[in-house]
Structure formats: structure tokens, C-alpha cells
Image 1 (cartoon, rainbow, N blue to C red):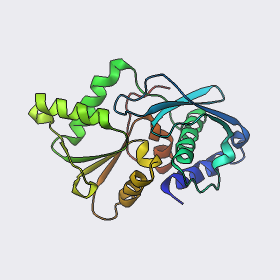
Image 2: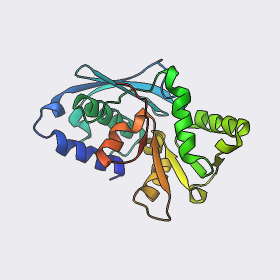
Image 3: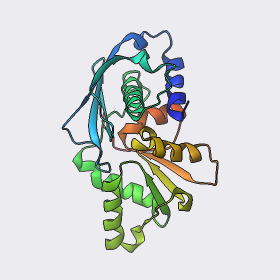
Image 4: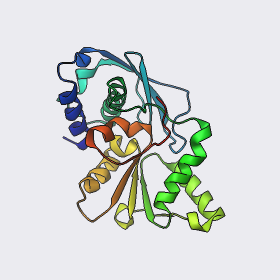
Length: 215
């Protein structure tokens, strides 16, 4: 079992008896732009007229019942991607969250400014498909010294660990997230980032940076 499985169990308990578990979810790759911080493939999930999206290095094309993930070990990255996709769209359908998709281009700068304000001056380890964000942080720090963020190559050297979707999907990255999830093995601040982790964060009540995500 993993922290993704725990989030699924929480969702299962919250929707028990609603009938949502019997509904069909459609998950498919999309050419639409996802979160600008991430460099994975955008996957769109549809359920009951609601649409959510996430970025992942493990895309899939499938139709499934919501209940497929209940009591599943979710051993593969693709299975965890599917589970988080379903967590997102059901959380949106049930109004547990108002955010299902990445923000529009008009919000990119202010979103980045708010994130930098929170992590400036700290040592940061990006745990996910966040190559785009790394470039943005380097550029901002070069132009404005007060916005400088120190990116580190090992999580144990970080003050803050940024977790995107792949930080839950990829086996090794998930291990890093779980290592620090409950504050174990040293004090690290985890900030979950982007629409991919929305449903997961709702179920766990965790800090989530996606202030301008759209419905």
C-alpha cells in the first residue's frame, strides 16, 4: 500500500453509497497545454460532465469504472496515474474541490511569483516532472537576486520538496515523497504542486500550490 492507495481509500469512504463508484471514467492523452511547470504529457479525465487534467510521464488511454482502484495495490506508475486522474475528476464532480485543470496563460506569472515568494532563499528539491519549473526558477533568480532559489540534487539536502504528479506516479519519486510525507527522516516541507495532485491533496488535507487552477 502507498499514500496514493490511502487517498483512494479515503475517497471510497467519502462516496460510499452515492453510486459514483459504478460510473464510467474516460481517461485519454490530450494535446492541450497542462501546467506550465511540468514537462509531462497531459492526460484528460472525464466523468459526469466534469473534466480534469494532469501531467504525467506515464500516459494512458482507457475507460474504467471508478471502483477499479478500490482495494487495488496500484503497483505500477500507470495505475497510480489512473488512480490520481480518477481522484481528481471525482473530487471535482462531488465538489470536494473547485480545481480540475491548469490555470490559463494570464495567471502563469502571478502563480510563479507567489510560489517564489514562498520558497525564495530556501534549498529546494523538485520531485516530479518539473524541468520547466527548474528553468523558470533559474531565470528568476538570475534576474532578481531576492528571488533566488537554490535547487539541490538530493532530497536530504533540501528545506522544501516540491512534489508534482510524477512524485506520486514514478516508483523512485514516490519513495522520496513517502519518506518525508509524515515528517519522518528529518524535517522537510512538502509542497504539492499543479493540478495532477489536486484530488490526492484533498483526500490527505495536504498543502497544495495551484492557486489559479480552473474548474
